[in-house]
Image (cartoon, rainbow, N blue to C red; front, side):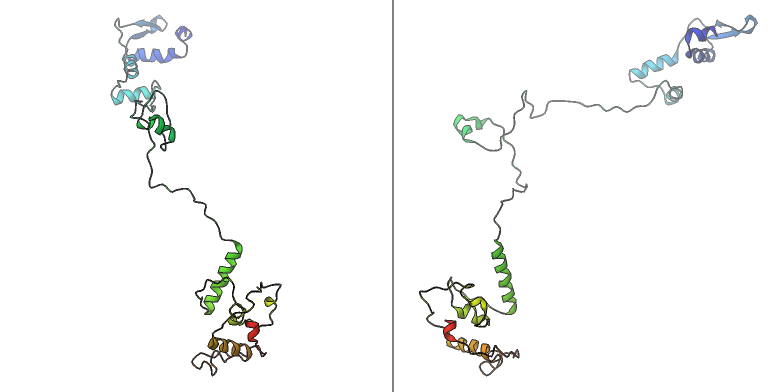
Length: 240
């Protein structure tokens, strides 16, 4: 009890190890007193712990004993080695991306460090323009007419006759879209010079009676569409 009072909680552990190593003996005749039995004490555990601190580990059985006694524990440590790289410099300098006018004038481009080009990188969006909404609508109508079987005519005329704008598309001459509030007309020239006579006859017949253009006597090879036309008098002057 006196030893435990002097050494604290570790006294019981120390006495147990001393008895196992036969460094002490207990004399029961003298009331359980401890007596020293060995003059030369060699603490193997202390030596093992000192070796562990230096990085030298005891055999595995002895190491497991130290672990069970919680004198040592396994831990992982990460170490890093830092050395100067090829781009080391006492002061950090940003690599140049292009040769500037100042570099050309003072000659610094000769010793400047340039950023390597990445030819596989994607470029920035060019930010190209977009179609106007009216142009989009025009393109949609163009596709519709082409799918219906109409063909584009090679022309660079920006002013066209009513015949090609309306009559050839089978729009009736009384249609409100042909009025001056919806169609721009010019004064000079007021009329066109010529219209292909053969094609004009087919368009006129289609407007007036229907199938004359697509299966009637003027075009027997065409497939009839059973159209009755607009059943009105078609005016050539209006078409011009």
